[in-house]
Image (cartoon, rainbow, N blue to C red; front, side, top):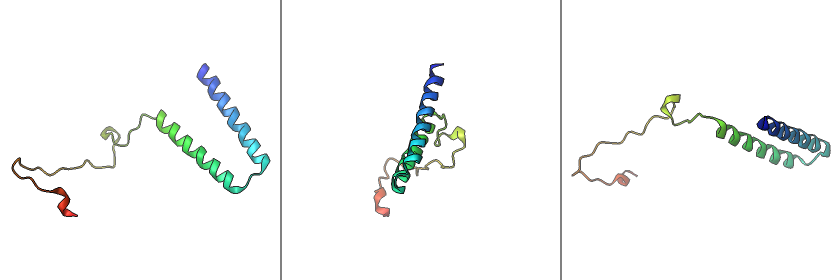
Length: 83
C-alpha cells in the first residue's frame, strides 16, 4: 500500500511539474534539457527494476563470447604486437 501511495505522489508531482512547465512557456533549450534528464531518469529506473542482463546467455545475448587463443606454457608472445 505504501509503494502505491508513493508512486501516486510521484506521479502527481510529475503531472503538476509538467503543467507548470507548459504554462510558463520556457525557452526550447530548457524544455529539451529537462526532457533529456527525464528520459535518462526513466531509463535508469527501468534498468534498475529489470531483471534483464544483456550479457547473460540465458537471455539470448547477441554478443558472442570472447574466444581466447589457446597457448602453451612455453609460448609467450606479445599480444600488442598486432597493432
